[in-house]
Image (cartoon, rainbow, N blue to C red; front, side, top):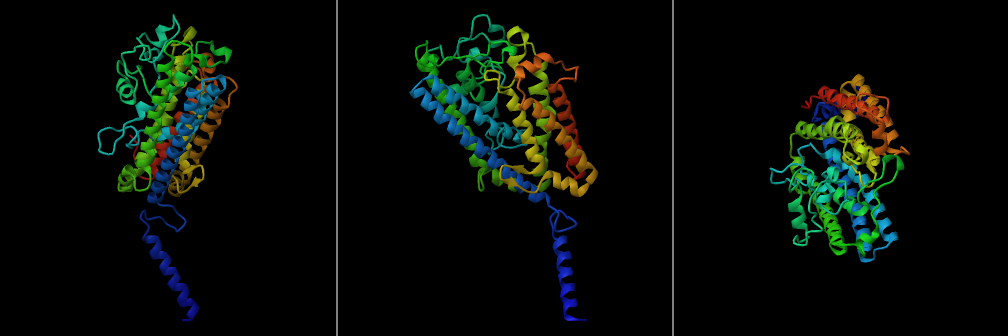
Length: 402
């Protein structure tokens, strides 16, 4: 046998053994493994929370600047910073229902802070004053800010969160949103957000307590996000737990978050519920939209759906690695095409909402859940289809989603 033939044989054998050593028994060196997909997912989670934290810190700085010097200009800057910070945060919602630290409470590594960060809808009168005649949908409480016997600090407002019922929310993004925009008591067709004046922080009753509440609630949110960054960092408490999980278990948890957002939380709770709701001015349902004070719900819808896409394709920002879609494509090309088609269709319809010139609170007044002619319900149906394809795709790689 010639020398070059011996070398070729040796190389061929080394490739065979290399393929057989792959942890998921893939058929070629170009295939990705489940463990690679899990590792890439962990990188995406960490970077997503880091981006959310960094933009929240920018918001915190803008709010501190406003409180120190309350003017129309600094007030607008604080609101703009809130809007900017919602974009990365909305994409982190896909990490819920994944048995991770954000929404579990019973394990040593649990943080359980999702409700403290993003609970909604809220009875805004639990926090601050509301307009007379709006109590039917804004709640009828003696507000925390007006009750001078209540000490406003992080421990107190965290302890009061959901203190009466699930709408008595005292912390998080939407508490801050209300403190910045105030109630939105305009008709949806007017295309206006809440009209709170910056003078609520200068000459209005309880101005100092309102300013303190705004800064304390913002600090609490920033700290909660930092906890998530730290626990998902390489060597962090939960990252270490996650990396020690059986590969199929870790992958199932990651995929379940995408399945949950597409098939339940976004489609049903954040889109169908406000379409059906009659809470709000003129029974408009706007009290049950996600960001009802700022009229930012269209962007919330987009960001939540984009988070699902991030998990499916293993991409976020500069991260682009082995993905759930890659595993499905290797196992069943037909199912991979069905998943890709459903994802593309869902985002096409979601983008119609996210980039719409009309606010979400107006769109929902034009639709009904038994009529699929409007953009909201069309997107809902596309999300349901996507959830079905996520589940079917998980099955072809040996993952069962309940």
